[in-house]
Length: 370
Image (tube, rainbow, N blue to C red):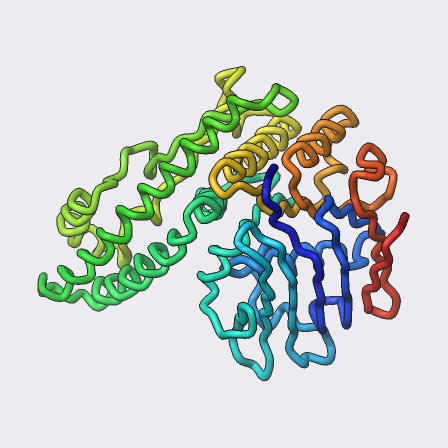
């Protein structure tokens, strides 16, 4: 029998449109419906902040506070995990940055990744395969983080060293001794990043082969700018950084490393680049990757991750909508799903908790429906 990873109690205080919202949850999928602007996505955004980073909207700390009070904000969640019960609080007040408490003790954001495994799919990601590489790198890194919580530490170490190296480049410092220590740190962290990303991609692609064809499989590949191969070992990356100093100085930034890769996707059955597939096919490919990621995590941690799927039902036909719900329930995942109408969740029937969100005077309220 699978272990459980689920939020059992969620409380939002002065978060976006939610002045004070509480949800008691039983581990089943949570179908949240209501009109546009009622505050449905704000709930999913709050849950996304139980993981490291800036959440599914990539909002600043100040943007999350309810207006016009601007008193700061606070989230609290009780979680049932494979390793026991945990209480997580994350908050910001008085103009300070975001703080995290795990079981009442201060913790770094990176520690959240060791407790909560979260995957999300939001409407802005519908253009993932056609827009710039930055969004695909973020998608790749969230996928990687779900398998390897230390990926966040490697990424932070790499970015810190790279910022320092970029300052030297902009100041046109030419003394090699200033670069060598920074490049050694970048090479070590960069090799760890590359290895974790390759592992995550291999796990997801293997999991896709175990699924039926309701959602088409995608071949995924990590490439460098213009499709070139990128250095992956610490030794190769250190050499590339050393050789590239003159070019990087002319550009004023580092032009080689894991921060420059892209995620390439091909619709397997049609041997068609994802960017050239229809809008519906692109969405189906994206759902396939997220579901495969979730399935692979079950094998890793013995429990499915928590899934956040904003407005996903509205963009699927009836058959694929039903197939998505079946996949979520087969996984045993607690999924938070939003939609404007209750009828979108009819195929879930009694397999989910139904919650209606309404808004009055700029304040969101949530009511559980039978």
